[in-house]
Every structure is written in C-alpha cells, then in structure tokens.
Image 1 (cartoon, rainbow, N blue to C red):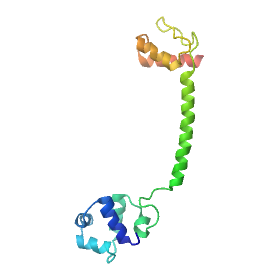
Image 2: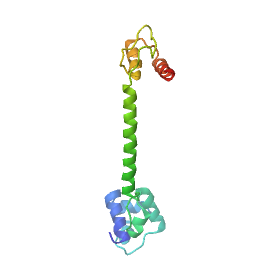
Image 3: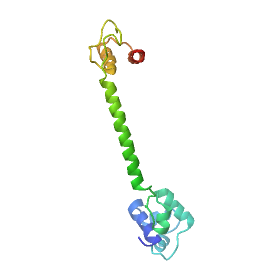
Image 4: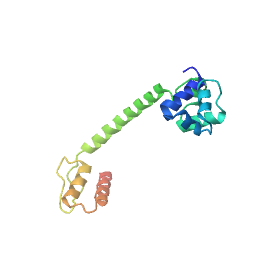
Length: 154
C-alpha cells in the first residue's frame, strides 16, 4: 500500500471491520472526513494516528511510511532462533526429568511406610504415589515430603 490513506483504509476495513461512519466516530469526524483521508485529499491528525496505532496495535512506521511489519512485530528470524533455543533446553529438561522418574528405589531407601516396602525398581515419585493410592501414605504432602527427604539422605 503506497499511501497513508490506503493503509488507514486497510486498518478500517480489514482490521477494525468498520464502516467509514463508524470509524469516524472514533475521532469525532464524519464519513466524509474519513473518505478524504483514505483518498489522500486530507492528512490525518497526530491524534487520529495515535488512536489508530493504540486501538488496533499497528506500527507507526507502517502507518506513516509503509515500512516494516504492520503490527510492529520483532524480527521473525530472531524469534524463531529463540524458540529453537528454548526447545533444546526443554528437551534437555525433559530428558533429565525422565531419567529422574526412572531412577529405581533401592530396598530400604524409602524406609517402611506403614509396614509396606516398595518393589525394587519402583521410581521414587511412583513409590510415594503408590503409598497414597494404597491408603498407606496418609497425607499426600507428608508422603511426598518424606520421600524427598529420604532421597536427599541417600
């Protein structure tokens, strides 16, 4: 879009989805003024530009000069690179969590919980859950806390 008027018309039609009359009410002007702005026969006021920018979250550079992303979004390539970095970190954390969850509980490591021992090879978090499911663990928070304390001592 080569003119400021055409870009404002785009915002009105495609983003705001308003008629010229409805759009004009935002600025206390009539549809004729909006038409004049869109046709390039009249310039928008700084206040009108500010309303369009803030209400519809469009970039000032795009409205005024037709440059950059219309919504003022940062560089897409930089966002993709950042997402890839976060994805790699998430994969590492998932692997560590999986390793922790699969770590077996050795006999006596958790101690007796109301007379029951967990089977060898049961993961530590699963051992705490099994005790609660059996009704042997009492308070869930207490069982998990005791499991974590036993783990730290081991």
